Image (cartoon, rainbow, N blue to C red; front, side):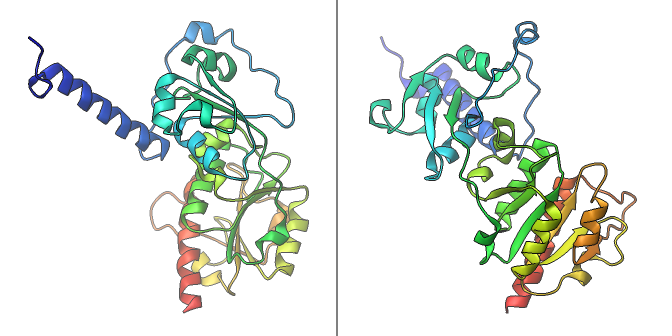
Length: 294
């Protein structure tokens, strides 16, 4: 006699375990809970070497990251490699109906390309880099973020998420000593890379001068700034400038911005991780701009 699914404890447990896993994965993709360290294939991973990528070749991975890339009309997709389970979770329909090639693979096949440490969730997308954006495209944006040689892609990805959350028009950074578009950056940004222009410039001082010409008031964040940031903001267009994780703003950048300011912190710790500082500065600037607009 067949078991009644309603009374089958094993079936119920499996169903609820699946739901819990999906909720947990979603929270990790959004950065709400930390991702546990990768433990699998440590022995095999020691022999892994990354494949050589062509200049116009980018691999993205992770369910949320790939889903955002597929939804971005500006993203040129080359091929989707995905497990059967991940294909169902992406909810993109049958592979034969899609405008790009789809290859059904095993998790181990993706490991061979991305390495054993990449938490890919069974999905990898080969794409072209996003189209290059120019500073003149920011004429209508009241708030942008400028990074002075912030090198850690995890920090830059987290900053991108905050920039999107607070409605910034772009994240501008240097071509040298800054992360290029990559799977690590995109995964850390959790979809934000597809939602905000990531503009890399050759000379940051020249770029700041161009922004000043577009009507932006640039504020460089410095722990030793002469005044609190909220007392420094002026005008109706603001470019927030943050320095690298250890050295802060370079001297040339300090001399080029319109003003230097600090984030006042009453506690014993007077400095923050650059991604945390960016989120606080973006919030305060957005509050200022909203009051200015009324």
